[in-house]
Amino acid sequence: MTPSPSAASADRRTVLRLFGLGAAATMGGATLAGCSKEVGSQGTATQADAIKAVLPAYRAADLLQPDIPGEGPIPSGYLKYPTNLVDAVTEQPGRSGQQIRAISPWWGPTPPGNDRNEYVQAINAKLGVEVVVSVQDGNTYADKVSAMLGARDVPDLLCIPNWEVDKIARFSDATKALFTDLTDYLQGDKAAAYPYLAALPTGSWEYCVWGGRLYAAPFPTDGAFAWMLYHRRDLVAKSGLATPTTIDELYEFGKKATNADRGVWAFGSVFDMVQQFHGCHQIWRRKPDGGLEHKYETAEFTAALEFTARLFAEGLVHPDTVASKGADEKQLFNGGRILMFQDGPGAWAGMQGEQSRVTPGFDMQPLPVFGVGGRDPLLWGSDKPVFYTFVRKDLAKERVEELLRVMNWCAAPFGSREYELREYGQEGKHFTRAPDGSPVPTDQFRKEFAGQFNSLGGRAPIKVRSGDAPNYVQEYIDYHKKFLDRRETDLFAGIKLELPANWSKQLQPTDDKIRDILRGRRPLSDMEQVRREFLSGGGEEGRAFHEKALSDNGR
Image (cartoon, rainbow, N blue to C red; front, side, top):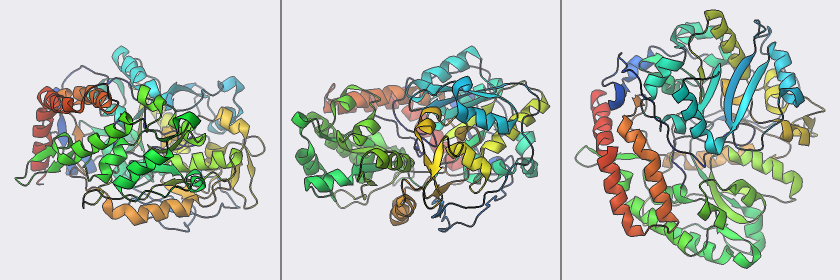
């Protein structure tokens, strides 16, 4: 079972994918003081007004007018690639000559090192300083982060996915002990010195506050939803199967599409999407009496669990998914071994683009959502950034400013030469141009690129047409517009929650237990025991904490 973070995952260009997490890390440390309601291992809930006081002042940095203007959480769309790029950064960010060490996750093959990587070399030449990004396996990144924090040995820049942060008990203590307080560098109008960081959405910055201070830069989500259920529309049409529009049709699709003798299964991971079809909220919902009810306590979650366990029990899920926490479902999907699997909205463009080069007619589309039992679907999503980038503590002011300049370069917007170099590399080596002028990645790009610089500075969310996925932008935005009104309202929007230690420590073990139930290693009846263990081990404490956070903020 994959976790259910409020975040989008993304394609290989933006280094994001939500699956295959390791064990949660635990940090000890001193108790923090500040503007929070509660401190230390009991968690904190910083009020919205206190958060706003330390955020950067937003300044848009659009170099080009979009063809499809963004609406709320829906990103702007560009249907053509610009012919005249501009220099967004006129002075080299790096000035010290001192190497910068960074660590970032990646869900793909390990790229060559700096000495054999022309993509990295080209960017470092522009930065004026050598940045060495240690790309770590995203499937085991939690263990890497845990070891670094426990040893108090972090690089100059450390990128951590939001879902890992949420599972680290007392993470606020870790931020104070190990990372630079960026408030005095980025608060209010001070952020104007780093204009492309200042152009990141305010909603994503709100989550970068711990203990009432600003400790990270965000990599914003690029859409309204956390998950989509993708299907191979080309193979579905070829087989004569109908696209499911109800939960019963989804089951029947699984029965008809699965042919183990031919090495084809209907499904990979689908549980998070099945929950949303059933109208299951992501974590908490209000009860009629005003208190909070966890999803594990609801009939909707139970029904989704039973349905998904049935898919596993009847052999409709690929064996690699059954046996593993992190099967390479993208590879299985690309190869036609599974016809449906869930991933974040960002996975769409990269997979469609890559596979259109090797599989004629490859057509990857999200399944339109539907409700179950007369209920509307409830789609998960929020403004929470996908990644946080932290700066190591105890650096000289000049060094922190240099690192922020590098991060600012990495956040350069669409329409700039910096954006093109970061996203596509060098023309003639890492990409060619389609007839419409848009970059088409080469094999060298796919070998050398591992999102080394994407996550370090974030980027303003946009969608750009490419020659290898020409219809993607319009289809992506149309999907979001069609289903945006089904997105769950975030009860805690604008409140920064630093979760109690006992709550955080329960998340991964509970996920593991539910995974065993889904895969038939434990009976469905064990869910009642899992629920009791979750509530007694930290869930009830979490309920009281979340209810108090709402009360303290007048909600």
